[in-house]
Image (cartoon, rainbow, N blue to C red; front, top):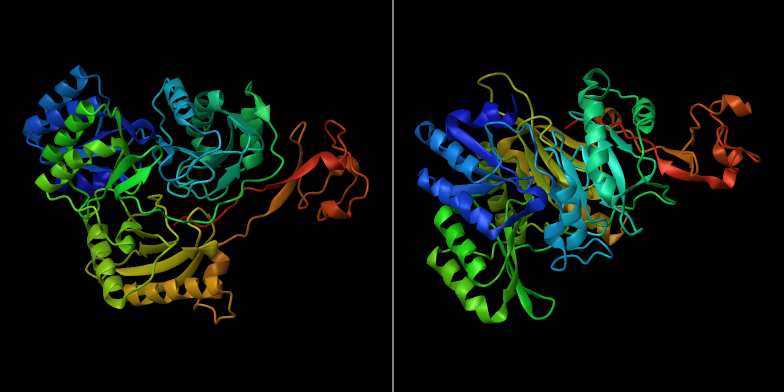
Length: 500
């Protein structure tokens, strides 16, 4: 059973989950969903980390809700997440980041080509933005600098083993290759699912034999952008004197009546779509300056605050997790009291294993015996970049009341690093670091036939011993296609790190 099932059935009765592919929902469709929820007595709905919609219904209302959703042709799941939502950075387009070629039409074309409901998590992310996470999916498509081509990073389910596909993927092929990869993994769970080690070369070989897609070798590996979380709420001006409005809720609860009025106003003012974010917030684009008062009236009517502190907006908590939300409130309050700077940092609270959150500093609940006070471990990502997949353990066995002290030390350490001064290291247990991290390795790959030269194995066909550096080889030809050494490019080797 999923975490949603085991943790929340008793508390929330029947949890309805509706996917909003790409974090996009037409205002009219959302209004239909809200009318169905309201008829079942639902007062509030939530938005999840994967840009999906969630609401709970009583057992007595469940059949009516199911029938109404079926009549409205709306797909849903009850107390399960067999089909995770496809998330995308579409919400950021034009208002937070400006992509080179990844525009509205490209996102929509890709999403429209999905003729199946994915069983693995899929991310579509622009490589220049840092609002939408890169690697929280199982299939992570990240735009390249070549128009309509994407990097693909496969994170095998229930692991943090990350495999970089050795060529770029064409936009139109994303749905087809997603189905191919998904079937290969789920039909061969003994090889590629929830394993401590995975043979990534075997994985590629099996898929390559079935591959008929447009391939585009890449000349350089993906460069992670420097992380910056934009302020994502309130009224903001963009483009030709238009406004966008971001709405965040401290308790994650959006009143159904408020959202219904919001959808109605969207339809009246010709705003076609509403966007959800992985920060459990919503965004409305394209508000005319002349209509700002109408939106202000709705916010006033429902007493919706749109000016929260930045150190409250940069948190990730598991979906439907009251424990994590309560701890977040405590830590935000203690940060406020200590006047803690958190700019360019984001935090994640994990109470369950393998929940796939996004953050530069993590607070992870450790397993304890029944009846014992919970303890936590604190770890952070390499260079504090939340898109990094390398983790460093800072402290373990931390009592709840001491968490904020350690977090504040870690925040201060980050800013001291930014100043460029020589500083004492934050206390890190070297034994833990060795167990929890493997630094990224790189291999050389032929850009014509994708043959790999790995220094760990050498090349038997060319009589090159294992351990021989590629730079030390004066004359080299690809053993498969005879391409010269100059046609080999350096790429990242799959990373193996501990799962947190």
